[in-house]
Amino acid sequence: MRESVQELMRDEEFRSYIESMFENVDEKAVKIVILDAASHLKDALASYRLDNDELDKAKDLFEDAFKEYREIGQYENYLIARGWVLRVKVIKGSLVGKELVDGFRQLYEETFKEPFEHTARYLSTASLILGNYLVSLALINDVEGIRKLPEKHWRVLNDNEQVSVLTRLMLNALLIPRGGLSGELEGKLGVNPEELVDAFGSYIHRESLPALRVALGIAKTEDGIKLCEEFIDAVCIDFVLAVKGNSVVVKRLREAIINASKNSLKGFGFDVESLINEFRGLVSGLDGRSLVQLIAPSNSMARLALMLRALINGNKELAKAHALYGVINHKLLGRLFLEAYKECKECCDLESESFRLALAKLFFLHV
Image 1 (cartoon, rainbow, N blue to C red):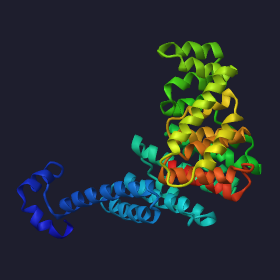
Image 2: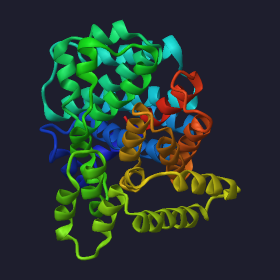
Image 3: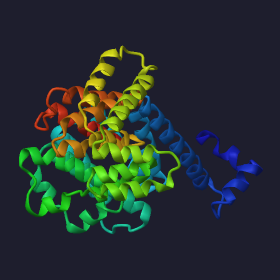
Image 4: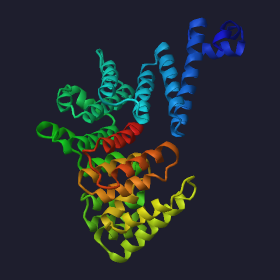
């Protein structure tokens, strides 16, 4: 289409389409329309390639997209697509250490350059890019670099609640084992259970939400049961009773989780019998409080948040169960959860570079 601009300008229907968006129908306007369509299509195809674990193809498409977004002045889309190029490189394992930090620092500096836009969309984009940069610093334990961030930038992180909570959980997981979390920074990075539920409540199965609030210490058992009154069946109350420790309900819940995982893994192309046995062993050792946290998430981002919380609180068996449960996702997402599980299988050592990187890959896929 780029080679047929003059011909397109003579097309009456196409001209009327351009006139609906631009005052003058000239070559510049036509080029912007074509590049806008092309960049959005490449962006969508890049996401599809990424989901299907075709990382090189995804990276190349994101690179083409961000160049076209920049050419037509769609700055937020340009920043997001350029960020995806870096994130795909991290997931692929070709961007690590200082090079990783330098890449995200450049994007961060470009995002927060003056004058800084304060539109809702730009702030949400800036929150995401700031989260990327902070985690890249934490991966090399650059605590001083994190401390030096301007206070006004810290406030931007909270403009996207889910990004903020997941970023702070990730920073806790990476910094605490290496003694990098103390004083003012500890206060900034803390995530209380109420915040977590507020951020990811829409990604928690509704019937398990009252029990999750009880499990995280936000609500008392009787309050959880009262919250279940809106549900017709008794499953919501069963979940609350499981948190309380009702042995009959806990046993029934364990069996249901194991059976559900077996059915979900049937379609995988590799031998999953050993994984199912390992998952059965993990679930059999979890109490009702942990079981409810395991089944609560309805998407992978909420699961990653609860998995990181379990690691931070030393509940390694629950963290491993979350990782294995995440494997039921196909293609890239399932592979990354499986990588995290394998690195966590023995002791979930947050000092281990390979485990830290496995968690980082999951983080950068979501943020």
